[in-house]
Length: 222
Image (cartoon, rainbow, N blue to C red; front, side, top):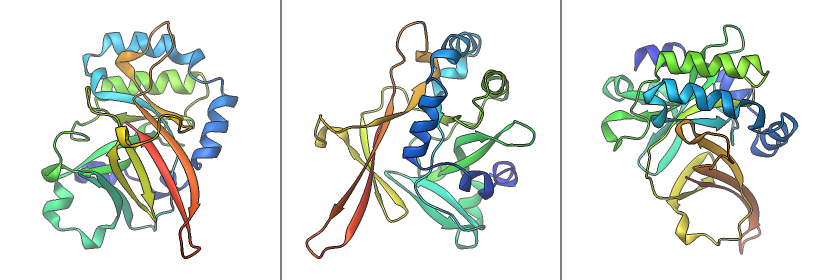
C-alpha cells in the first residue's frame, strides 16, 4: 500500500545485521529478560497484540535501492518496484517492521502480496500498540535489536530455506529435531513472567553439492 511504501527505507533494511551478528547482539543485550514484563503489560492493554510478535532484527541478503522483499504463499523474495503492477503495489501489506533511526517510529522492512495471501501479513500495524512497544524498546536501548512482525496464531511450524535471495517455507516436521536454531520471533500475547516461547527460529548451514558448489541455507521454524 502506498503509505507503507512511502515510509519504507531500503537503507534501514540494509543496516540490519546477519543472523549470527543479530544473535550475538541479542545475547549482549541480555535477551528478553529486561523487557519481557513491560511488553507483557503492553500486550494486555492492546487486544491486537495476538496478531503481532517481537522480531529479532536480521537479514539474509542485500537489496538494491528500488527493491523490496515480498512474501507470496511459501516464498519471500526481492522484487524491483518497476516490475510490479499497480494492482500488486496497491495490495501490498507490511509484514515486518523496524524502528527508524531518527524518529524512532516503526517502518516497514518486508511486505506481503495481499491479494495472494491467505491472511499472514495482511494486518495493518496497530498504531497504539506500535507506539507502546517502541517506547519500551527505546527506553531499554533495544530499538536496534528488536522489531515487530505480523503473526498467525495456530500456524504449523515451518522451515525456511534461503536459496540465493529467495526464502522458501516447508513444513518443519520434515526437519531433523536436533537442528541447532536461533529464536527470532516471540508472540507479544505469549510474553509473561515465565520463559517466552518463540514461534519462529532460524539456523544457518553451508553445504557443498556434488559439483562442489556451496549453498547457504537459512532455516526458520515458524
